[in-house]
Image: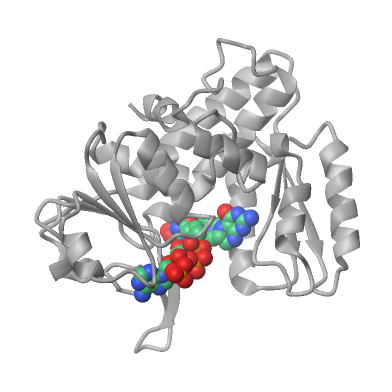
Length: 310
Ligand SMILES: NC(=O)C1=CN([C@@H]2O[C@H](COP(=O)(O)OP(=O)(O)OC[C@H]3O[C@@H](n4cnc5c(N)ncnc54)[C@H](OP(=O)(O)O)[C@@H]3O)[C@@H](O)[C@H]2O)C=CC1
Ligand SMILES: Nc1nc(=O)c2c([nH]1)NC[C@@H]1CN(c3ccc(C(=O)N[C@@H](CCC(=O)O)C(=O)O)cc3)C=[N+]21
């Protein structure tokens, strides 16, 4: 049987470290780290995620605030709110839940969040820093993927990794982080020919396509490690909705290790959001020049978090 990589347990470990960082900042007389979440419209899945994020903040002592805006909020009003939050000294992290309604230019909105408070790591400045290995805020899900991976393969040097999906949110940043970790990375997508054969060569598969049970057992070589990022809600035979990943989990028991859905990457996304918020608060209030900071600029920040989990 494949080992199950317990995302909830690893997320709890990271949360303990984050809580200790919050306590240390506050004890040193700095303000309580603050995260603001903006939600436009009433998408039920987004509401679930936002509630989870707010609850998680409470657990580690981050002060959270929430801005719920109506579906028909104008782009101008949203940008004005972000301007206010950019200037608010009590707000260290700003997260604007996506997808946004169609009448809003998502790229423009994400660009308007100041990079120092961009705890999603979606701002072009943070994307540029990531792709040049020069620090910045690393997107939460890709950071979570790396931590889960390192919990089973501490050294990724020379490993053959296949990433399925090339989105700006998951596939591309994961590929960049893997390259920084000296892995050999193949990024695939909907037009890739022969995906099963490509996957069969891989030591590691990171599946982030949003295609339920795309990766079959015969795509996976013995002792490969599988990180399943995909989450699709489907209606089960009993009429209840259930979550399905991008990997046919039951067929992959010959793998060395695999993440479950739920309970794999999802909880790590939230734990990494909290860690990013503390990183942002520290940089804004203490400054990046503080060498004692665990979060000082480093080319491979996933190693720093890894130390926290060791
Ligand atoms: N666990 C978590 O915390 C998170 C989970 N997710 C989940 O991860 C999944 C991916 O999210 P996201 O990256 O935002 O999705 P996108 O839809 O933005 O990107 C999906 C990517 O997968 C590729 N793709 C789609 N179908 C196939 C296929 N059949 N074969 C090969 N490649 C395929 C697409 O190719 P092309 O570019 O050619 O269209 C695209 O590059 C979703 O299920 C999402 O719900 C997302 C964020 C966080
Ligand atoms: N600006 C922005 N930043 C995001 O980080 C962001 C976003 N928008 N939009 C939506 C996606 C999705 N996302 C998830 C967060 C937690 C779980 C999670 O906790 N999943 C649980 C189960 C969740 C459930 O039961 O529904 C798990 O997999 O175990 C999943 C997905 C963050 N996203």
